[in-house]
Each structure stands twice: as C-alpha cells, then as structure tokens.
Length: 137
Ligand code: RTP
Ligand code: MG
Image 1 (cartoon, rainbow, N blue to C red):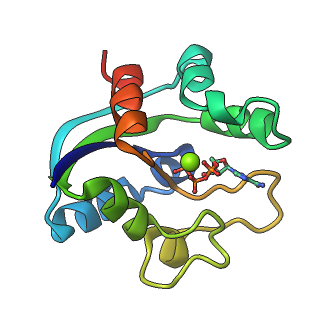
Image 2: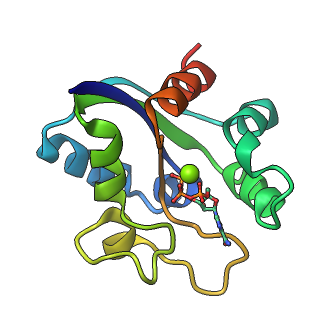
Image 3: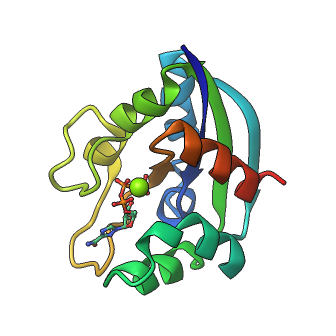
C-alpha cells in the first residue's frame, strides 16, 4: 500500500555531511522524495514533534541536540514506506543497530546522554500525517 512518511536527518547527520548518503539509500531503495528542506528547528516544532516523550529523562537532551544545528526534513512516498524507512534506519541505539542500516553503519552514540542516531522516521500513518504538518506547513 502506498504511504507517506516524514523523515528527519538530525543535526549529527547534517553536521557530518551524511545527508547525501542517507538520501542515496532512500532513493536506491525505490522511495520517492516528494518534499525536502533544510532548516533550523524551532522549540515549538520540537515540542510538537516529540510530545510523546515529554517528561522522559532524555527529553531535554534530545531537544537540545535537535537545536544544535540544522536538520533536513523530507517526505517520502512508497509502498509500506513507514515500516520500510524504519527498517533502513535500524534500531534506536547505533552501537547495537544492525550493520547494513543507516544507524548501524554510520551512527555513533558513545558517551552521549541521548542517542545521536542520525535520522528520525514516523512510526505510523497517524504520526506521519501529524509530523508532515509540523515540518511542512
Ligand atoms: P525516532 O523517533 O527518532 O525515529 O527514533 P526511535 O523511534 O527509534 O526512538 P524513540 O524511542 O522514538 O526516541 C526518540 C529519539 O530520542 C532519542 N533517544 N535517546 N536513552 C537515550 O539515550 C535515548 N532514548 C531515545 C533518540 O534520538 C531517539 O531517536
Ligand atoms: Mg520514535
């Protein structure tokens, strides 16, 4: 089934010059990039985007990390792209994310308060529509 998802290249990915490599993997898989922009996230956007994590110990370090540099937001379209992009990204923690995934191949998390894991991808159809509205208004 054709879906849309919202992905972010987080500040570690943009800062390390990995945007192209990450988008290359997305396109090589066959997903279409239907919107793309680099921006400095606002605290309001992050409060909305990460509302489900408010109150968790990693919430403030996560927001501070996401404010530390530009992010790249993109809308992807494709068959089962929500699940498919999360599969390309790998599990949350770069050290244990499977080799072959973005986080497993490229992510570094040693000594950090928050997982600097390069990318975000929506986790459901509802989250995708909500998050697309936050980053592309
Ligand atoms: P995402 O939402 O960014 O695609 O990642 P996810 O589903 O794999 O992870 P989630 O549990 O939704 O957490 C959101 C982001 O918060 C940071 N995090 N750090 N204990 C930690 O150090 C920790 N836990 C979560 C990560 O950047 C994670 O992607
Ligand atoms: Mg998540």
